[in-house]
Structures are given as C-alpha cells and as structure tokens.
Length: 90
Image (cartoon, rainbow, N blue to C red; front, side):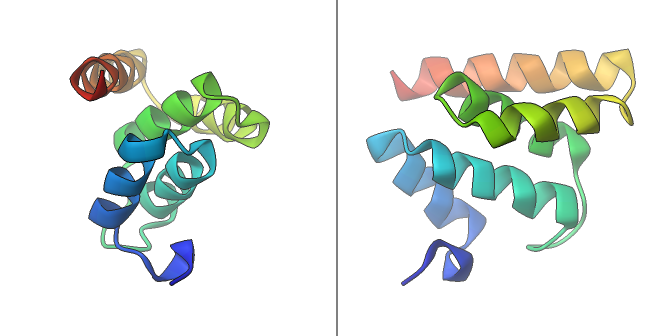
C-alpha cells in the first residue's frame, strides 16, 4: 500500500513508529488540501513543523507558505500541538 492510499490515522501511526519525515509531510499535505475531509491549516502547519524538525526540507517551505495565511494565534496553536505530539511519542 502506498502512502497516498493510507488514511491520516495510518500515516500518524507509521510516522510515530519510525519517525518517517516523508509520512509526516504527507499528513501535512492531507490537511492543507483537505484530502481526507476539510482543510485545517493549524493541523497542516503542525505536521509540516514536525516533518521539518525531522529533516524534510520541503516541509519547511510549506510551513512558511501556510504561516503567511495564518494568524499569530493559529501558528502558536499549531506549534503547541506539535510539541504535545512530540512529547507523547517519546
């Protein structure tokens, strides 16, 4: 099964197990395009942020692009959610 056929939940589980930054990036794409439902820029930013911290350079660019369309409060929320997810995985 390719990552494109995986649900968001399956991507999260896959990424959490091996820390795969490409899977995390795919999850960010899913949220910023609404592939699995509605568009959620806060969740997209969160996953791009985590993917970027794990070495995905493309996620850095997407995170920056999203931030231009988000409020400061939304960015702060996304960063908090990223920290919470990271602390729950370790």
